[in-house]
Amino acid sequence: MTESNSTKIQRSYKFRCYPNSIQRQQLSIEFGHARWVWNSCLAWRTNIYKVYGEKVTAIDFSRELTFLKQLDTYSWLKEASATVLNQKLRDQDIAFRNFFAGRAKYPKFKKKLHAQSIRYQLDQRIITNLYRAGEFIKLPKLGVLKLKWSRKPIDIPKVVTVIKDCTDHYFVSFMCEESIQPLPRKPNGIGIDLGVRDVVVTSEGWKSGNPKHLRLHARTLKKAQRRFSRKIKGSKRWHKQRVIVANVHAKVRNTRQDWIHKLSTTLIYQAGFIAMEDLNVKGMMANRRLSKAIGDVGMHDLNRQLEYKAKWAGTEFVQVNRWAPTSKTCSECSSVQETMPLSVRNWTCPDCNISHDRDVNAAKNILALATVGRIESYARGGVHKLEVVV
Ligand SMILES: [Zn+2]
Image (cartoon, rainbow, N blue to C red; front, top):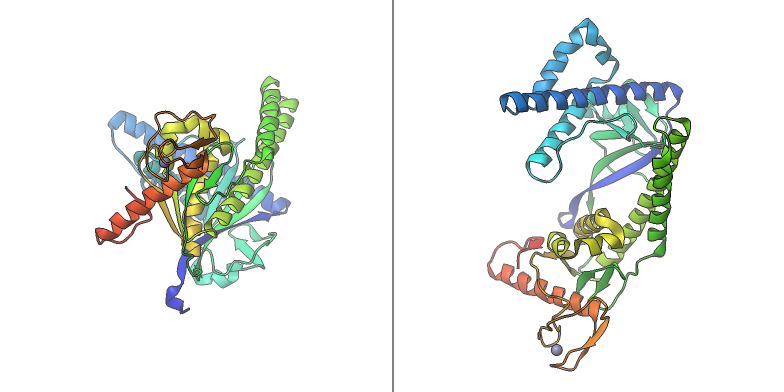
């Protein structure tokens, strides 16, 4: 395969970080000042919008910030790195853009108790002094940070995020552009049905299961949260329980993430063509049922991972963007049953006499829907897009 066959991807890396006590002190200044900038800017632009009906951006606030830094009362702002404060303002602009596009809620004020994160832009002109993969990373006002390099990135990051989570663990994360060689595409296609009993069932009859430990953790979390709510706010026990809740949270999140990653990878290598229902459509129909499976976040993570891993592997991933009665339709003869209660796991089509596993049948129908959409989109002569409106 030649170089021209390779695809450019953004791979994200996250490493545990161990700052020393001086670095922790500086980081707490950076986190605090960044939070102040975020909250002040948010209050400022919210107020201007309410009073004057005008939209201002973080760039406008950045001008104010330069002015403030020159005043004695605000000179403490200079203790933080300029790049950290600027990146925080940029993040807020992105948050507002997402809000205006209807992708996110109105940006919130940041609190000290939440996980903290700040970003550094790395000066690419002196990058060899700042970064060497697997060896060191050097940030303004902090110096060289000690990282646990669990993997060695190939390319150089442009922006680096430093995170402190609720349990006082530090992480460094960044994205790297990398080129990968897609594998030769498999000839088969599969449809995916999402559910609770099995998170994923494919048209070829493969079932993912729904591991109990995901649900067990959720129960532990609920218990810890209940205990937390009974403590007096701000008390010693309250703080102690807060850390416990955060730890359980992290554990739940990690286990789920881990499982979803394995699931999406398994699916990607099963076929050259993968079809799944659009989550927004599915969400409307069976929102509660699905979120019970691995949570809303989990479902969207699965979707997102399938999307980017498909690109990496050279697999075609299609989302069926239309609601269809996939469970009630016979995948053999297309006759539609009037009802199909959730309790029915197996059924025999009265018209063609073929027996069906409920979920496999639904997955077959999703594959068929996507295949029709694919042929239509080819016929229109345009470029075949990832998302197909059938
Ligand atoms: Zn039939």
